[in-house]
Amino acid sequence: MALDEAPPFWWGKANWQAWALSPLAYLYGKGAAKRMAQAPAGQVDVPVICVGNFIAGGAGKTPTAIQLAKFAIKAGLRPGFLSRGYGGGITTTTQVDLAKHNAYDVGDEPLLLAEIAPTVISADRLAGANLLTRLDCNLVIMDDGFQNPQLHKDYSLVVIDSERGIGNGFPMPAGPLRAPLTGQLLKADAILVIGDAPGSDKAVRLAARAAKPVFHAKLRTINKAEWRGQRVIAFAGIANPQKFFTSLAETGAEIVEAIPFGDHHFYSKEETRELLGKAKLRHMPLVTTSKDMVRLKSIHKHQIELAEKSHVLNVELVFEDPATLQRIIRDAIKNSKIRMVKK
Image (tube, rainbow, N blue to C red; front, side, top):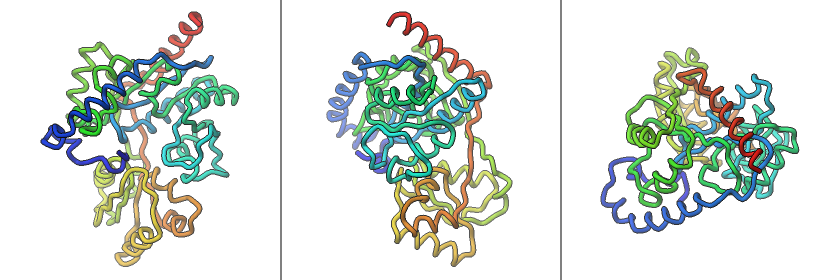
């Protein structure tokens, strides 16, 4: 099932639809758990931090990976990002080139990552990590890939959105879990809860029982004052568009119309014309997310026009305890050294 087609019943209490699909979910979960339990296919001679999540869809992995890389750079390290490149057409292990590639080539998230540090897309995580080491990176930060057994991970940080949590608790297709939660918790080194809504409470309790550290962070709007009192039209093609609309409203903006699209959505000529038409008719600015913006900066004239006439609500991840980033990187380096000795 595509991420942009996640059914609403995934995010509430398990209903008849979830139970009807539970036999398929059992089989899927069993296979996913077996794959996760496999020994890593290979390793690289630098620390590897994986930023993943328990569920299909967005939880805040990319902002987390970016903050880790920024801290690592300040600490004198040379981090590099490793991404699957979801939604992109390039299927070989490739370094992202901002002057050459667009979202049709490499997906949207790698373009955001490449603004911070060298970024490689690869379905083969081991091959991608090896390329990063050849690019002189001494820390690999994986954006997603927690369930993938190809590459040895020295530290796995699992991100949970506080609103959605783990949904109804079923594996796909009955729910959003990528594998049964118990097995996933065993592979996690720590949990990061983004936001302060109660939807993550169950996962936090289970993590505490499994003796996993639980960190907390919030997304903070950078250009908040820019929107106070403005009447705007908002659009977003991310996993949870409502979260973006809420963040925009909290700046004091009046959202006259909120238009959601599916995750990783590529805007058609008709859709861009409709959005631009709404803005022109109402004399209002269009506001979207940074992920949508990089998807609009592509090869098609109509998308580029929408990008030029849209504004971005910029956000950054702020950790409740500023020492969290240092702790994660320190533990990853320590675990890597232990691994090297055993190698």
